[in-house]
Figure 1 (tube, helix red, strand yellow):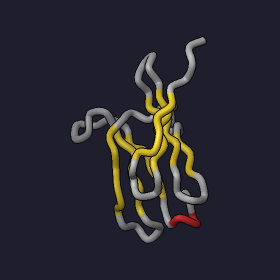
Figure 2: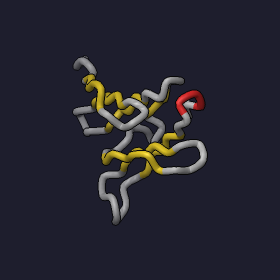
Figure 3: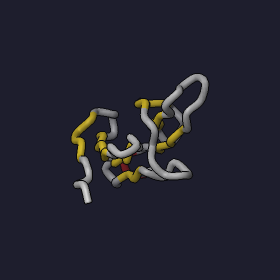
Figure 4: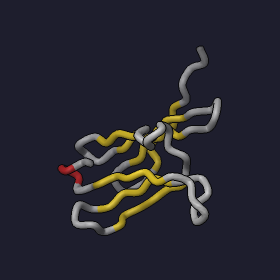
Length: 86
């Protein structure tokens, strides 16, 4: 949650409706603002974190090709970072 930016972020698992899962953003009073498809990392879909200004960093699970995507509070993609191989 990014209270100062009036955003609540949730991640959803894959389903029959959305095969790869997705992350979505809503205002704190429940108005859906945006969503984007992708499989969020973590057993409990915990691979995301929001800053107070509403930016959300999402770790998408791509098997061996994980990536971190940063979105602004309006859902615009701002950057993509890939972890360095070990």
